[in-house]
Length: 521
Image (tube, rainbow, N blue to C red; front, side, top):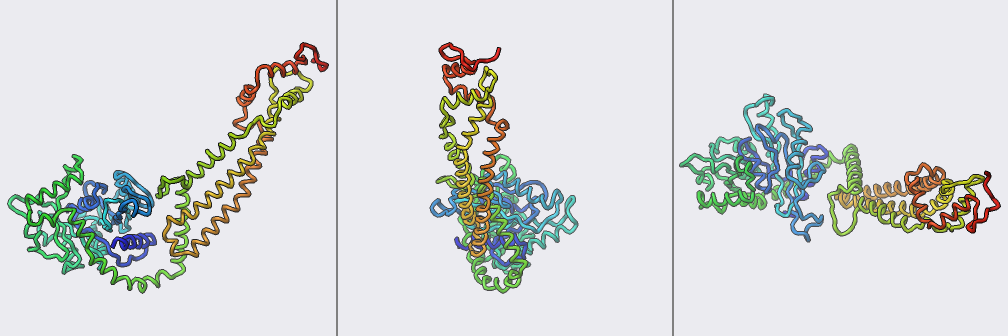
């Protein structure tokens, strides 16, 4: 089962992505009214508060929660040993942000109206504290439209719910408040339509702590009122006051266990959220049904997915996914994190700021320029004039010769970055498991991308060369070659040498004799 659930989740995501009719895959569908405590049960199963809350109908789109246990670090191939959340190809580490994102994704389609939409939101949760489950949270059942809700909102929600629970491989989690008549509850009504014998329905009894004094649910929990093959499990959720007082779910587990020990000792071991999670994760019947339905999949899907239109869609989708993953790696937003070595864009940054910069720092700007060269350039640049200060034209002439030394490190940087970008190609494929089913496509995409990168090496090399050439011609326009550069150049000359240069420029030898090249008075 541990290996099967990720496969099921992937199939669900593919069908949601392509917008095709879903195959009958196993999943746990939570059904209940708006006030049944359905969302609280789901949050307790996961162990954190993350679902949007508020008055009225908050859940307006199906939310498919794919819970995956990362296990210990050795078992986790992706190296993830913390809780991660992925929604709409985005990564989150904060529950408040995931709540905001669910709300934003809902409003993206429905805006502020109170209607519902059948398009699901798929949320993946990776954590060592989770068990492998796929849970679907649906809009709560209701009868009366409120505010701007459509008049047929009851029918719409019921049809949406039935579209999920009709799947014979789905497990129905019927969430029912204990303080109402269980036989007439909406969850039981929906369940009885598709599963009248309750073969694939687990009854989850909530609000046991809110029952009228003198009443209890012992007969219901023991199966004397209604029999369900998969069991009837009671839970105690956090109240709104508990949530406002920041009561943790872990503390709620403890209080829940104490409640059942005090009030329902005979069924205490078979009650509570933790027992519900164990039952859900061990229900083999849904996976038996999945095994039986597998042979039916090719017959129902071969015709639809052998068409040219579908193949074109898969082609475009995989290429777009490759481009997105490639850019994520370059930008540093990839879901794959490693502490062993630099990866992707950080490696390119290292090439620019470490390797390339170090090579530039090793260049001696005065290498190949003797004192006589500097003196001669200064004399030649003064012409028939007498210059008091260091002639700027002499500086430009000398620097132009030295700029050539930047060419080789710059070209070497081009090739290093090109090699790194070629490595990112294979790294991107590693993050897209779908390409393992399309080896020829993978090979062709790799060949085309490498060809594009290789074709850009020579234009980039020429661009670097011409940039250096322009720097020689238009030296004054370069940002870093300015008056400050001249001052830095001067500082590298000792005082006596500057005095000698000054004397020469004025036509006076160091011994005080006038030069034959005297200035005109």
